[in-house]
Structure formats: C-alpha cells, structure tokens
Amino acid sequence: MSIHIAGHQMDVGESLNTFVETELKALLEKYVGEIYESHVHLSKDHHEFVTDLAVHVSKNLAIHSKGQAGDAYKSFGDALSKLETRIKKYRSRLRDRKRHSDVAAISAMYSVFNHESEDNGADTPVIIAEMAHDIHHLTVSEAVMKLDLGDSPVIMFKNAANNQLNVVYRRKDGNIGWIDPTKCSN
View 1 (cartoon, rainbow, N blue to C red):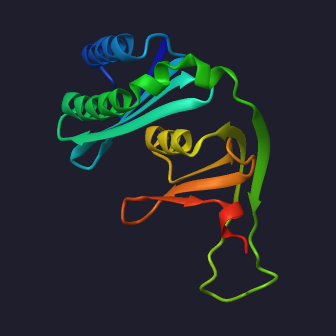
View 2 (view 1 turned 90 degrees about the horizontal axis):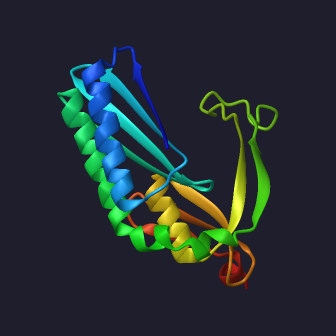
C-alpha cells in the first residue's frame, strides 16, 4: 500500500503527514484491505484548506472524495468521512472479487476538436479534449456504482445485458440519467 501525500503551495509538516497516513491506513485496512495506491492532495484556497483524496482500490476502480475546512486536519477529516461513507455504501460490491475478475475492456479514444471551420462566431467556445478510456462490460447498477465512487459526471460502458454501449450520467437535479440506444431506437 502506497500513500502519496502532497501539498500545493503549502508545506505539509511531519505531524500532518503522519496524521494523514495513520488515519487513511486505518480506514482502508478496516474496510477495503489491500489497495494499489492512494493520493492525498492538500491545498489552501484563500481562507480554507482543501483536501482531495483518490484511492485506487483496483486497476479499474478509484474512489474520490473532497473536503474543505478552515483547518488542514478538519479538511482531511471531512474528506476521510466522505470516503468512508462511499466505501460503506458499496462495501459488499467492492469485496465481491468475482465481479472484478472477469471484466473485459475495450479501449476507446475520444477526441473533440475546435470546429472553427464550421462556425466562426465569437460565442463559439474552444473545445479541445482528448483522453483514453477503457470501456468495461458492466451492469447498469455497477456503472452507477462507479459513477458514485469516482465522483465522475459521466461513465460510458458496454451493457452486460445487451452488449451495447450505454452511458450513465449525473443530472443537474442530482438524479442519475441512463442512455441506452437500444431502447431509444424506433
């Protein structure tokens, strides 16, 4: 288990470093067991401390949480309690090794380019994004679990029921949306 602790424009002292490492190890050993790695990023935003936690539970599953407070220790405690809530919520699924052992992945590459040749309007935003992403065979409930655990806005997956590409996403009202092209076609 490796824990990487970093501070952005601030010095993470020995006391805070030891506190973060001890508390995070205790929580992860209690609920998760063996993990690949964890990243703790501490920063100061005006008068508040912000802590970002990323715990890589398996090769394809990362759990994220974020905490804010006026004190660095309280900020980490807030992020840690959110992480604990997420782990408790999905603990039975995380411990089910069978679900994660037979996952086939397809590699996909997404590219969005600036469409300046189509529209030269001043209000056209410049969009440049490129990322590699593995698309896994998942059930809809597993995709929603990854959406919640990863604190992601959207997850694309290959539906285990019909072998089609599907998308689950977090709506502005806080609910989950599901796009299944096989149900949308006429």
